[in-house]
Amino acid sequence: MINDQTTPDVERSEVPSVQGLEADVIVIGAGVTGLTAGLALKLAGRRVVVLEAQRSRNNESSRTTAHLTEVMDTRFGALLRRFGFEDTQLIIEGQRHAINMIERWARDLAPDCGFRRVPGYLFAARDDRAQQAALEAELGAVTRLGYSDILTEKVPAPFPVAGALRFERQAQLRPAAYLRALESQIHGNGSLVVRGIRVRAVEDDGSDKPVRVATNGGDVFAPHVIVATHVPIDDEAAIHANLTAHRSYAVAARFRCDLGALLWDLGAPYHYFRTVCMARGEYLIAGGGDHSVGATIDTEKVLKDLAEHMRERFGPVEITHRWSGQIIETLDGLPYVGEDTATKRVSLATGFGGNGFTGGTLAGLVLSDAIRGRENRWARLLAPTRSLPLATLGRKVRRNLTAMKRLAGLLKDQSRAVEDLPPRTGMVTSRYGDRLAVYRNEAGVLYTLSAVCPHRGGHVAWNHAERSWDCPSCGSRFGVTGEVLNGPAQQDLSLRYLAESASTPSSSYAAAAAGPGT
Image (cartoon, rainbow, N blue to C red; front, side):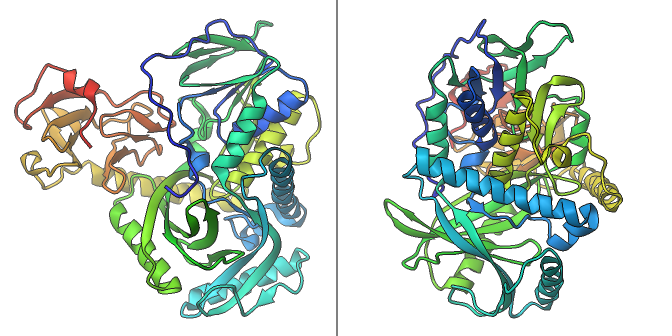
């Protein structure tokens, strides 16, 4: 993948022991939110322990295309309608504050991460009237917010546009290099990052005792806990009802020209572009194709369409990399950052949408200030307990109806027989009185799992492009043998049996330990 990931660590069978470890703050999750909060707290003199389930740095933050912009995914006009003039300005200032902090730490701690200030262009395609109308509406909104002289008819790209809004002093970087630097700075003086640790539960009994965090490596304790796991790990948290999971895709190709800008259109779903200089040369990155997790969609075609869209805009480039990531959206378009409603000693951050790197940075700073007892300008606006704007209630109803229709569709058996299932392919079916998720590996072995998501009982669907089981109800994703890839689920899909054919159940689980022959 082109998103500057390091070579994954060699997977080890043993789990690091953290039994009895104590700290001032425990941070769960070593993405941009957790590392930002952890480093800010360490620099303020706190002993911080960051726990991360992934042994490598292959988490959601490393999959970002790193468009650092003050322009939220939610359009300016919608923000004004939902939050009013003053709070919309505060939202923009929060994004700018996050970019400024990233720039400061990139300069001081990660000079090799390629941080760079570039302009950003929100453009309307010349052949799309809907985009042109949306551009006019956005121009009216940004003018009201105080932007001036930003309308242009040119973008630094080899294709014409109907018009664009130019935003100065946006930024880009190589995310993995930046995150590595933050992680290295946390280690020392009683603080550390421990990988390979999966958190099972966070327990606050309301007494003066420290909060207990139960993990696969033992129990750790601290008076404050930050849950920065992309989605909350508490299966019963009411906040899950206000979150929606989406998949977002990206492709990259070798490209000789440096755009020197961020570009994104007003399509639905939208597409975006930027270039990045790597050790192997210059690359062009295109992203888009977003859809809700578990949607009845050909995910392989999404990637092909994205590659074709890149070629239509930039010529006959050869795709060298492709990948995807999970984004979590809230009903009103702003993340939830602050205290868990059940306990004031546990804080969370989730729902960054497509602005994960800037939103996660701001969230880390907000949570750090809260633990230090400092006021923060954005704490009220991002609080999980905030009231939803009336304009978002209709979205919640429509989202629930869509989820119910999707679930009803998934409950219908697929017409293909399990016996005809090709290698490296999965399907959901009903056999042996159970709803089953069946995958056939290259050797012909069938991995038969329960199709019931352990989070809240939704039924998973097969994602062909990424060879995963995706739950449309809660957004959880699982590998072909059932292991959790994305929460909120904390438990794997249960293994039913392995067999050489669909009609020959086996009581042996030996093949599961060896993994699918993919």
